[in-house]
Image (cartoon, rainbow, N blue to C red; front, top):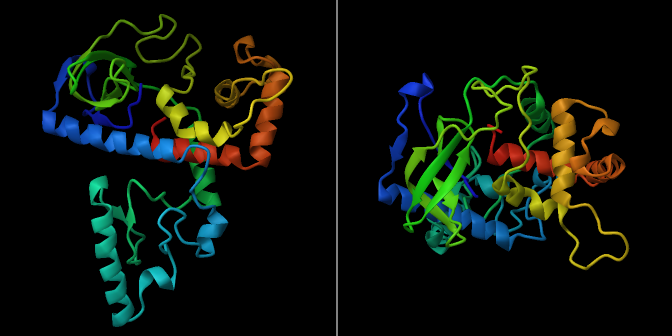
Length: 298
């Protein structure tokens, strides 16, 4: 189930929070349009990566989607004539992307604009990636419980949806009937369905945060990074790429040795080898960066 957005409720005593959250239909349709636009763009980019590397970005390479400058003098404008030309070009660009309905972004102190839906954001620097890595995998303590919601969608169908905590209500869900992302007009908590091995605080018997495998939406963000083979392979079937990524995240989360990897992840030798390949090809950097940028709370 895809949930690119979530409504944030104020933290506090979960018993005082409403068990039913209503959203104006106009807001639900807006969230639906936004999520569908990003989902379509991810599908369009499948098999290719329009994201600039940090080195290319610093060298002044333009956006790989629209071809417009991102940083440097060409994007900043240094005199009245160049500024006027950039502003006129921005106006034409906005008109071309009016159907995207998500607005534009630009770097601070730069004038050239880029579409929120069509143009990837600038890459993180090596220092920023290290900070994100530390934030993603440092020991954490969960203070609130997971939540399961029963959601009424704009299409009229009803689906279950999981969110990180009782304070995060999904605003969009991939409808199991329509098979596309829909906005949530009503969300009702359906507690009591959590794993019995996790207590109310979200901790296991050892007091550690329970490992959570990739959700379907998180996998959709990174699938194109690791599943790059278009032709069928001969010989022994290759381990499912999602299982490999889950195995690596599990090892990092639990800090176990490769040999201690649970059997559900398949051969630990395969997982270890594929991880080294992902690191060598810089794909693992891209995976962690994508997960951090799209869902920093995970």
